[in-house]
Image (cartoon, rainbow over all chains, first blue to last red; front, side):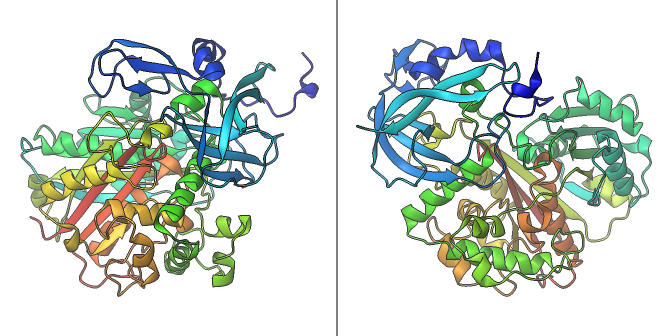
Length: 145
Length: 401
């Protein structure tokens, strides 16, 4: 394998685990969380026990794919996490989805702080290159059209 | 909590010096902290009956770490050494373990070890996303930094502050850091207030914690009977408690899993409130009794939110509390008199909790020269792990036995 073509260094300790990521693909690609069939509470990420009523009758739940900015911040402090070294500034936001779930995510195609209440929608974008050389994709949000 | 039978006394403590070469193994810094701590006592290695070690799982991947540490320190075979991996307040969790071992009456001498070794990363880069469910599984690439600044921004927006409370906080901490031998900033020139209050990336960095590199600490706790047997003068007793929130920060918003947390989001710290409530009850104090507070402050606003969580000032009023000079010497509650994160950096599990505890002990012993809070009898130390998904609060008392 020609490592010269990789964008960033190959860390010895990598937080990405391909198998574990595969198991969580529904959450990463489609925002699938959980809904308690007993009390109705919705959760993201998915859970196997409901902390509200403590029952285990949780069903897959597709979170709302649109929402609004609660708070945002441009990450340009100069120490990106592993795998993100080749990416410049990133706009990070806490988003309240239309169903009330709160999601932390990167805002794609935007590098400026967005005011509270800005409408955003789910998109799938490239996230990083992992230690196997593969590109990892997952959810981000962008300003609603 | 009512089942505990003994008070717990801090016998000795030590932190490693700064500046270990990059190739220093974790066993070396661990041994250094331990021998420095034990050397202050009349105890021998074989007197250690139990212990707990907190380590940075990002850089130390060896199995059975408790055994590895016990072996490298030459501890007796019967000495249990419980490993804990609770991110940046792991040291507080190790204290929590040993405190209970002794308070329960089973042991009389316990060892609390913490270490963060820069095997591969510097301590800031060690903040890669391993501690958060969605970060780990979904590769968002976020770290403490993102959570910290989102929290700061929301706090400011919610309670109507600009950056000045954080600038004031950091100015006071920079001053204290220059009075604290061992601090990263010791001996350096003070930054100007204009630099500290700048609305820029440089300003944010000037107001934030530094990095310190490989660090280990050791603390020896003993039972009240053992303290008397050793003839300890003016013993410092300690109490400790903790509470957690969901690791996923989105669930910090109006968390439905516990009625206590429902009213809050990331601009308040209910886990600190819960832990403080319990430890104040155990130590028989109220927030008004606290003479000095030592809190985890990777940014100024984090420290401010911690003061609110500890009940030292009302929620949302922390910024005004700081601007009024109440965290300085002579204020209502001198805070981070060692300089906090600006002075000791973000060593994560290496010392983020312990350095606060150690400063509290120095204050109660009257040994915080140049930054001493006169007549201090009660100190509180706090740290968090994984962006406040758990918080440790400890109370230190003088004249308690």
